[in-house]
Image 1 (cartoon, rainbow over the protein chains, first blue to last red):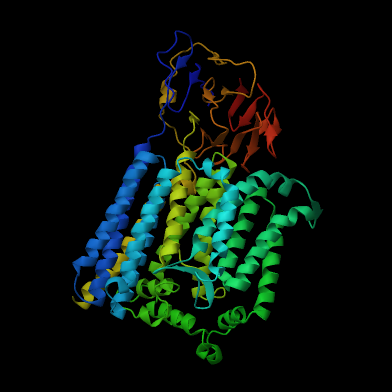
Image 2: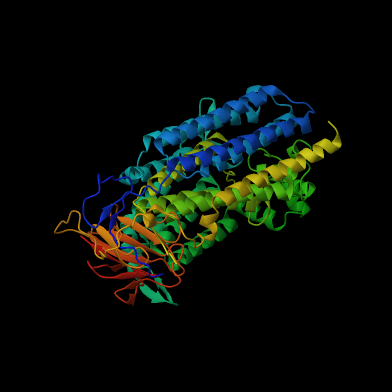
Length: 477
Length: 162
C-alpha cells in the first residue's frame, strides 16, 4: 500500500511535453482515451441492430404472406446504409460520443417500421398509401436532420446562448396549431398543422426547444430557486415571488389541456419542467408543489371538460359496456388489451397475430401490436432498450462538464422516459390513455424527427463530456 | 413454410432481441455495477524509475495569481504525480470515466467533484460511502478548496497548486 512511487509526472490528455527534462521529474504523457474503441463497439452493435431489423421484416413476410418480398428489404437496406453513414459521420465529428445510443435508436426504429409494414400487409395497402413506406421516408428524413444537427451543433454550449430564442420558438410551435387556417383537429386534439399535403405536429419539435430553454434558464436561476425559502414540514419551500416560472409553465400546460384538448402533451411539458427544476435545485418541494398544481388542474379538467372526463371513465371502467360501446370510449383500449392477452408470453409470432383489429394500431397502439406478436418477452426487450437509452442520457448528464449540458441531457432523456411511460401506461391501463407517441416506434413523421434530434443532441453532449484530462490512481498492494 | 420452422424462427427472433439487450449491458457493465478494484498495469506505474524521493512536484510553469492550475498527489499510491486542471470541472471516483480515477477499497464509483466557480475551486462530495476530507474535516455541501490544503479521498491525498 505504501510503496510510493516518487517522481513527478505531468499527465495530460494529449499534451506532449517534448523530451524529458534532465531532472528528477519525468515528463510522460499517458494516452488513456482510445476513441476508435468506442466507435468500433458502436459499429458492431449497429450491424447487430440492422440485422435485427432485417430479421423482423423477413419474419413479417414469412408470417403474413408466406414468402419473401425483396423490394421492401431493399428499402430497408437503404435505411441501414444511412445508419452506417451516420456512424461514419460520428467517427469524424464526434469520436468520443456514446456508442450505445445509435444502435438502440436504429433497433427501435427498425422494429417500428417492421410492425407498421406488417399492419399494411394486413390492410392490403401499398405504395404511398401505406404507412410503412411513409415511415421509411420519414426515417430517412429524420436521420438526415439528425446528421445536420450533429454537423451544425459542434458545441452544445452554443445552445445556451439561444435560450430565450428557444423559449419563443417552443411556445410558438406549441401555439401554432391554434392558428386558424393551418391548424387541424384530428381525433378531437388540435395538435397538427396542415401545409399542403403534409401534416405536422409542431409540438414535438417544441419540446426540444423548451428543454433547451429550461436548461438555460435554470442554470442562471437555480441559486434563487434553491437557496432561499421557508422551512416547513422538514422541507424548504420556495418564496412566493420565485413561483412565477412554475405558474407560467403550469398555465401553459393547462392551456394545452383546455384549448388543444390533449392530456398527454400537457403532462409531457409540465413533467419536463418539474424534473429539470428538481435536478437543478435538488429540492423535493418543487416536485410536490408542481404535482399538486397539476393534479388539481387535471381533476378540475376531468370534471369540466367532457373529453378528459370520457378518458377517465374509459380508463376506470374499460370493460363497462356503456364505455365500450360509446364513441371515443374504451373500445380501442380493450381491443389493445385483448391483443396483448392473445400474445401471451412469447407472442403469436411476427405476421401471425391480428393486431390490425385495434384502431390506430400503427401509431398510438403500436405497443399493443408489438406485444401481441412478440409477447411479453419481446415487449420487455423493447422496454429494456428504452431503459438503456434513458440510462445513457442520465449518464451523459451526470458526467457533464457544465451545468447547462448536464441539465439538457437529463431533460432530453427524461422526455423520452416520460413519453414511454405515458403511452405504455395508457395502453396497459396503468394511467388514463392519452395521445402521446411511442418514441421511435410509432408511425408519425414529426415524432420521428423530434426523437432523432434528441438522439443527435445526446450524442453531441456525450462527445464533449469525454474531453477532459485524466489520471488513474491504482492501489498497488 | 412449416409451422415448426415458423415457431423456431419466432423464438429465435426473441432470443436475438435479448442478445442485443445483453450485448449492450455487457458492454457497459462497469457503468452499471461499478468498476472492480483491480491492479491496473498502467503506463503510470511503469514510469517511476527514479528511486530518489521528490515528494513535491517540480513546478513546470508557475503563475502567481488566479485559480489553481495543478492537482498534486501528496500521499497515496501515486504520490508525486500531478494533473493539470484544464477544464472547469474534474470528477473523481472509481469509475473509468472519471477525470481522476482512484481505484482503492475506500473510493466510491462517483466519489467527488472539483468545480471552478468564479475563479475558486470548490469540492463537492457526491454522497460517497467513506466521504471526502478537506484538511481533516468531512465535506458536505460544495466547499472552497484553498491552495496547498490537503484533500483526502480513500488513501489518496492531493493538494491544489498554482
